[in-house]
Length: 335
Ligand code: KG4
Ligand code: ZN
Image (tube, rainbow, N blue to C red; front, side):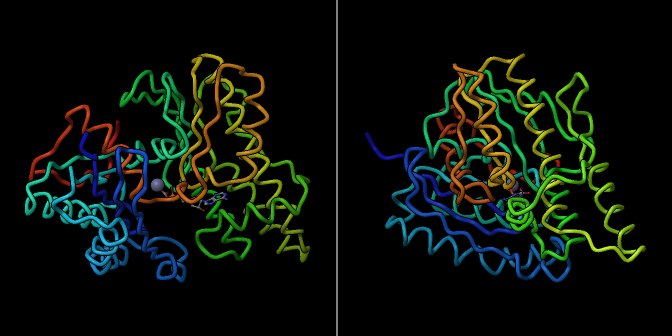
């Protein structure tokens, strides 16, 4: 059988990424040009700056991805691209590049949802078995997604305010950590103790939703108050206390969801899925669910990348989900 080779694009935020994926689960190349350094001095992603970097990088990434995979355009089966959710100007660069290549080389164009991409990064570990549940935690999203079958997504819970990653980045700033702060806060958390007992919002409520803005404010108020009275707080303990609160809420709601929705797999996905605290806590909790397997996205594929978009692309290819040249970026795209 001919190889299914998908050229995949991801430009929804601050990584320009192009990948070549074989049969949905083999990475022939996955080029990621990160712009983090350019955004760091602003303390977060500046949409205009992101778009400009994507324009500069996209053709370079395509060339590199094809060369590394040792394929040419004529070997390709299809082109897949993230068309939402994300920053509109950033998404447009990927969408325009993908449309152009699809048109020029007469290839089918596959429109991919960024969140589906994070979930399907699990394919690079093992085949996704259904029904499945995904806890998607990133800089822009915190969602529990139930998947009764392939390519079916039902959001059963989500954040009412900040995403978990966003909260990490904001409290990290107060601790003097550069954007994106999640990884460093995670490291500090492992050197400290949960001594501050920050709030676990909505933890006991009978739903699968989350809220992190109260926790973020409690953290910032604690630090500012200490500053005012000239007290120095232990940064590692602050990080550990913050992380303990985030992990408690994420884990408790996920366990509640698994009790109501028995699934074969629980997938942890998105940038925050790299967090050591949540990874080990879910490993513990899953011992009580003998028929549910925990699938942790590979660390290198937790953040934004085009490989995960190619993994979904292959699913959509089999389901005949294609777009034409009228495909547009959809910043608020939902499932
Ligand atoms: O999925 P992603 O790369 O981009 C979005 O689609 O948002 O996620 C980036 C987010 C950032 O907020 C970053 O601080 C967070 O993931 N992050 C972490 C860790 N590594 C990255 N948060 C907590 N612990 C980590 N180890
Ligand atoms: Zn993402």
